[in-house]
Length: 610
Image (cartoon, rainbow, N blue to C red; front, side, top):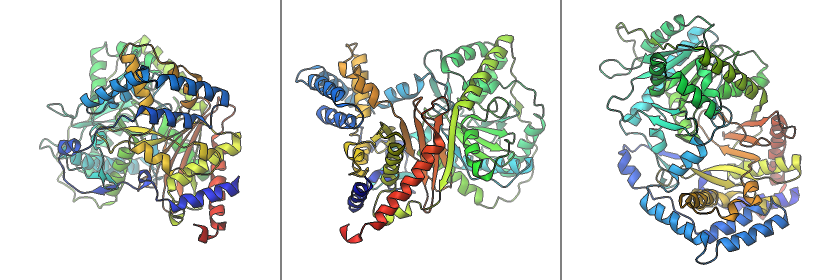
C-alpha cells in the first residue's frame, strides 16, 4: 500500500499545487467596501449532470456496491429530461439571477440558526494563543489592555473601509465577513435563532463587555472626542472592574448561553421579562466584543498544557471553573487567564476561521509595538456593572445549564499537539501542496485505525464569490481510497463553486420552497451516509503560532484543525468520550506516524522519476 502511495505522491508533486492552499496574499488597497464587493462574481450553480456524477464518485469508496447501484438508479430518474431534477435546477438558476448569492441566506439558516445543539463544542471554534509569561493579575490586566487596544485598531480599518483587500492568486476575495464579527451577537429562539449586528446603527456601540468572576461590566473604550482609550486608560478601567468583582459567589448567568438552543430560547424569554435583566442582556449583545478575565486553571504538565488550554477556549472547564465567565452567543470573546492561558472563542454564524485569524494576526503584531507616550490622565467614568435579578425559575435554568455543561465537559476528548519534525517547508520542497499532504496523511491515519475510508469534510472557502462562505472538499475519493492521487484536484473544484455539497443542499431546499415532494435521492440511505462526516477537518493557517480547535460534527467522529507553520504543524484533534470507537490521542499519534511515513517514502523515491 505504501509503495502505491509513494508513486501517488511523487506524481502529485509534479502537479502545480491548487490555488486553495496558497497563502492568502494581502494587498494594502484602501478600497471602498461596496465598490470592491460589486466587482466580485456571483456564486455559480453547477451543472446538474456534473454534480450527480461527482456525487456518485464521492459515494463509491464509502457505501457498498448494492447501495451504490440503488443510488445510481435514483439519480438516473432524478436527471431525466423534463423531470424533477431539471425543474429544481431551473428554480435554483432563477434564484441565482435574482439574489446576490443564492446560497448565503439558506446556509446561514440551515448550518447555524436552525441548528439546535449547544453552540459550545458543537459549533463555536476556539483558538489557543501562545502561552503568556505573566502569572498575576497585573500581567493579565496589562495584556488585556493591549489586546483591547489592538482590536480597536483593527476596528478602525473596518470603520474607515481601509481593510486590506485579500487575494487568492490574482482573484480578490469577499471581505463581507470582516464587517460581521464586531458589535454582533446571536439571539436564541425557541425554534430558530437570529443574528443581530449593531455596526450600522445611527449610534454604533462604543463599549465592550468585560466579565470577571461571572460578573459583567460595560466598559466604554472611546473618549468623548471619539478617540480610543489608550492602553494605560484601559488598564486603569480593568483594575476598577477587577476590584468591583472580587466576590466569587455570584450566579453564573452566562452559563445559560451554553445550553441546548431551545432550552436557552425559553430561558431567555423568561430572563428578559424583567426590565433590568433585559437592559443588561442588550448591553452585552450590543457590545463591540467581550473580554473574559478568567481564573487560573488547574496546573498540568507542559505536555498536557496545550490540550488543557484548548478545552479552556472551547468550554471554559465546567461550572466550577470558567464556563460561567462567558456569553457564548457573543460573536467574539477574548479569553485571558490569570495564569497566562489566552485565546478566544467565536460564535460561528457570522464568519469562518480565516477572518478571525487575520484579526488575531493583526492584534498580535500590534501588541509587539512599544506603547504610546502616556497621556495625561483625565478621570474616566466608572465601568458600569450589569445587574441581573435571579428569580427561582432563572436559578433553576442556571442549574440545568450547569449540569448540561458539565456533561459536555466530561464528554469532550481533546488532543492539541505540535508536530515538530517538519512543517509546510517539506511538502513545498517536494513541489506539493502542504494541505494535500496533510489531508492524505489524515486519510492514511484513519484507514490504519479503522481499516476503512470514511466521509471526510474539509472546509473550502468560496470567498472569491460575493458573500461566499464555504463548500466541501471531499478528501475521500476513489483514488485516495487506493492512495493513487493527491488532494489537489478536488480542491480546485470546490473553491470555484463546482463542488457537490452546497448544490445538493440547494436542490433539496428548492424542493422544500416549491412545496414539492422531496425527491427520493434525499431520502436515500447513501445521502445520510455521505453527510455523516466521521472526519471534519479544516486548515486555518495563521502567522501567529496558534491553533484553532472545534468539536466533532457527529457522535462517532473527529474534529481536526491544523495550522501549518514553516517548520512545524499545530494540530487540534477532538472526539467524544461517549463513543468507545474514537480516541483523540490515538488519531493524533496515527497522524504523526502517517506524516513521517509519507515523508520517508518521498525521500526514498529517486528524484529522476519526478
